[in-house]
Length: 383
Image (cartoon, rainbow, N blue to C red; front, side, top):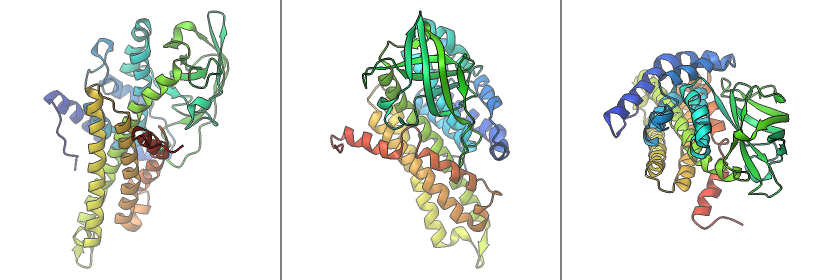
């Protein structure tokens, strides 16, 4: 059964209903086959863009929907519950659009945002490196002044949409200063010297291509510098707060889908003359799953509402990401348990969703990093 929601306006209800209908009718039926074939769902992003579901939280003057984050995340939750690879892709694409919309200049916004928000162009976010994942200040990729622009040299790792994106938001070192030596660039996917590596072989989310990108003296004009030189790290960290809410929404959607599957199965499967949902052991497990989903959704919406009101939300975003992704992992595992042997087969989606849930505890900052962020806000960070 769909999640019960209290949305702020009739318009918001219509948007979330549209997302639910598209997710159920156009995404979910193709998810299992596409994941099994490692097929990237580019057409799905074009379709979502055409429906306005890629542009929900952005300003109308650039083609956005002008909707609050509270609404966007609940629509994203519906998409992520139907097909997690697409949900993650929407969140990553929104991260790219956010960097351009908040930190880009007027000409940069006018030039790139309409096509990005409409789905004609797909974005990706290049922050992590093999030796600089949880510690972005340790990145080694360089951007060196060359003529009127820059040359980028180095390697970015674990890039969602790597090799598939039309544009990359890329963070590179312009000086040796650990914090103020990183700058942000917008790089075309077909730039000379940009070499995507073979996709990673992963446990799950196989429809979402993840690959390293090698930059061999990629030339970038000065007009593609986002913000000023040396402002890249604050841009990256600020954007990640919103990105963590996107991943929280996908995780809540996945957990809700697993709960729905488990409840439906438990209401039909019979043992010892009764439906298994009537056995206390199963009923209590389902109750714990429901509590985990509702708690994660509440944390996500609290952070989103703070963001919508212009209040600090970094700590709340980390709490939401931590709770939602841990809930996705535990609820998907319990859903497999409720279905028993059937849950371990590919006849039901919970097996795939359990594998997909694991990475959500890792990307956009591991859940150990989320605990560090929360502790810092409490003034109790170790070290």
